[in-house]
Length: 259
Ligand SMILES: C[S@@+](CC[C@H](N)C(=O)[O-])C[C@H]1O[C@@H](n2cnc3c(N)ncnc32)[C@H](O)[C@@H]1O
Image 1 (cartoon, helix red, strand yellow):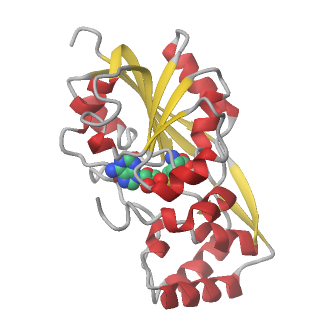
Image 2: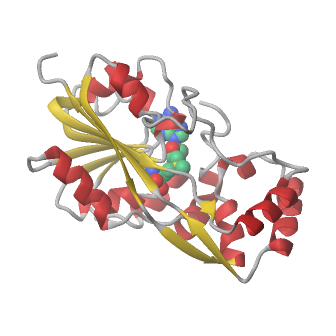
C-alpha cells in the first residue's frame, strides 16, 4: 500500500473531528436498492467508523475492517460494542480472519480508491452472498465560493497543484457514469449498476476548514514544515465561515446470483 493510503492514522482524532459524517438518506438509498432486509455487512477501510455507525444504527451486523491500527482504535470509541472489527486491508481479507465469510452488503466509504485494482471485483464478489449488494460512496469536499476557491488554490500552489484524488481509471469528469461504476459495468461479477447523488452542503469555521484539510492525504504526505506553511498561507485568505459543497456520489451494484 502507498504511503498516501496509510497516511490517515497519524491524524485519527482530527479525522474523526473534522470530516463530516454520513446522512441517514445514504442508508435509505442503499437499503432501497437492496430491496430486502440487509442483515450482515462488511465495511472496507472503515476509518474512524463514520459509515459504520450509519449501518450499525439500522440494525445491520457490521464487520468493520481497516488496515490502520490508529484509525481502528479511534473507531472503537464511536461504534456500538457489538460491531466486529478486523485490522486488515481489503487485499488481505480473503486470507485473513474473515476468509470464507459472505455478507449481504459489502461497502466502502471514501476508501475504495486506495485498494489494489488487481482482481478487485472477483475479490469483492467472493465476499458477497449471491445477489448481495456492493456500495461505494464518497466525493470531494469543495469550496462553494469561486473567489475563495481561487484564493486557496493560489495559496496552495507552491506546495500542491491539487488536493483531489484523480479518477482511478481515468474516466473524464464529464462522463455520466463515473468510477467505480465504470469498472463495475465492465465486471462479469456484477449487474444492475447504479449511480446517484446525495446533495450536501457543509459550513466550517476557518480554523475547522484548515483542520479538515489536515486530514486530506495530499497534505498529510507533505513534510511537517511544508504543512505548517501551506496551512498558514491558506488560513490568511479564508473568510470567517467557509461554505463547502460536499455532495455524496453513491455507486451500487448487485453480485450476479448465477456465478
Ligand atoms: C479517506 S479514509 C475513509 C475512512 C472512512 N471510511 C470514512 O468514510 O470516514 C480512507 C481509509 O481507507 C483506509 N485504507 C487505505 N488503504 C486501504 C486498503 N488497501 N484496504 C482497505 N482500506 C484501506 C485508510 O487507512 C483510511 O482509513
